[in-house]
Length: 332
Ligand code: PBG
Image (tube, rainbow, N blue to C red; front, side):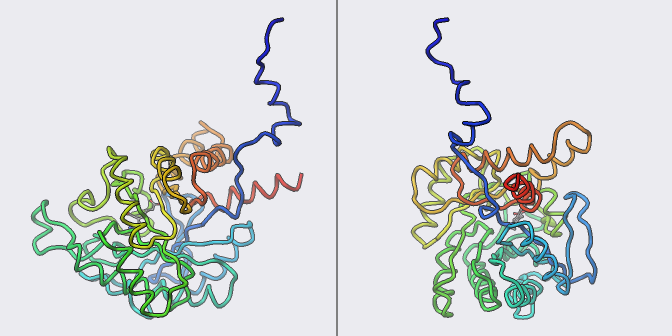
């Protein structure tokens, strides 16, 4: 048979691991954790099977569960006891996330990341201070520059409470620079910033907005989050964040935006993160529940693909379940 090229020769069980180009490890993953000031017991999140909101008193136990799977990093989101126009519980010294961070950094070895945004803390659900009459007029939106100071305060309050890294997600122009300056002034020059650099206005955030109670009360986020049609614009967003001092560059969501992950990987030497968001998690669960796909296999393939596209680290609600399967594999 005249067949010089047989790529199948490299697919036998013996050689597959040797020629594998991409690998996934628990140390690549960050697990999001929701801390809720309004409850004193775990409340399951309906749209995100396997995830719950936990009370501050239960956050250490929750983080210990994550660590047991081999995942070493968590990202904390807060649901405050009350919300107001300016999101003041986002930057309160005794805010829900700040209390949780103090406990987790004192009692566990987890690497603690803080999501820095106001949308879970504002009564209107937008990611900053809104213009007067924004509720009636859809052309009005978040006041960009007035929001910067509140984001900077939020980041500093999280670092004060023990956050190892902060991750601003509000898509406010200038947020990375404002936060870098405030952290440095407060003596937190060693705290890195993982910027949600290219965050799209995506329908895949639906389940999260249920989980964190952060859906906008009016309008949407298209005036500040990116248009899904744009990839070159993502490079401009990233460039600005790099100039302002971002340490890690994130793309969000992950799977529908792997081209953007790849573009950033090729153009920058910074670590690239991708956020495999709530909708990406929920849709696999929904299909698996119907018996239409194998959940663990589909989750593993998703995360592997995100790494193959160029991500170094992945924020994902699959962190624990995938890490558990990875360590089971390595024992065989
Ligand atoms: C806060 C924030 C959101 C997510 C992470 N940080 C919500 C949003 O922008 O609406 C989404 C995470 C997910 O869907 O898993 N701004």
